[in-house]
Image 1: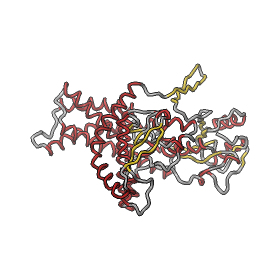
Image 2 (image 1 turned 180 degrees about the vertical axis):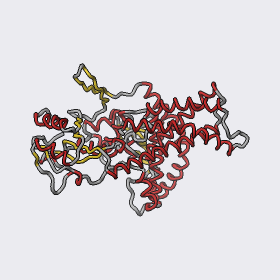
Image 3 (image 1 turned 135 degrees about the vertical axis):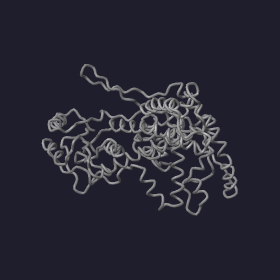
Image 4 (image 1 turned 30 degrees about the horizontal axis):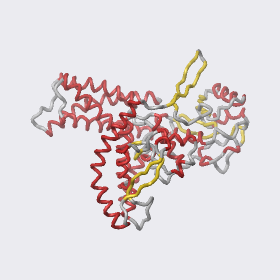
Length: 479
């Protein structure tokens, strides 16, 4: 079973759960409102079920709701399903308003709750099954030709996606090209090209990923020999440029052309995102205003100052002043109140003002200071192609101001490659989850450590033991 068939099985399980969720929703509504019958009239049941099947199939195909989008994380899976279930219930209410008895608020809430619980259970069961399969070793073993940053990034991404049914057996690299977490005490051992396939066979490798796909005859011979031996060969496009471009493979009568198309949001998408910022920003700023006022009064009495303005670089490199509570970054342990405000990101709540002014967005790359921005590489400069956000994909992965710009760029570009209102709302929900888990961990670290880690398919800390003890003699030292 591969990724596509797994997605199909998850969708089939979702569609099988839908009628059961309707039945359970009817029973739950009867418990909450005994005046309503516990059994569904058949025409009403069909009128709700058929549109639900069609809408969920469409949503699942368009948004990819299998739970493994951007790698498995329980918080991401729950947030995606929650937003999708709300969209389904809203669309179903609109449809049944004209074609069937109106979907009451009680019934809609019960149906949405049953859907969400069932969908989460399906994906959690699949994740547990995948973990067991990984532990038992029933996986394809992939070797990566290369050892630079791109090769390491590929290894980590393959590990974050258990639905691919593969594990990284190791790296095949040059003697002078060993760095980072992949180096080992007995590494490297130089192996002639003709013996590489024998080495791969001895390690039970089923696929070779060519990160450094040079035009040298030895690399082409290696790829050909791997195919002859039944070892699949895949390529990372060269030169690999991790920029904001969407690949499009064209088949010109057997000649393949990889076209890189720029990712630029449409005018409608920008207007819709701004409307979301104004709507949710106004709502959330009103909800959090009492918290900000109380904290500002306490800070003024203890530090003599409630707020601070900090210079940040935003959209297209334009500098602006970002508002935040007067809290130092990573306060000392002897400042418990300020440390609590920093840990829970309460110090960032005044930035709703920047959102309403149009200098920031609710979701986007976190803005950094001019000193950092002046040292941006061309790749990191792409973070400035969108409005900075109060939260983003890097933040829900645990990255904060003290982390490097390059670490955050990896996630920021991943978000900017496929921006959507669905992603923005999901990331806002994930942010709430992240803050709640951070609070729980600070209150009871021993209790919540396993809870958080069990729902997060993290990357291995040490991969040196899995590195193939072999090298491709003719490979250069770059990716």
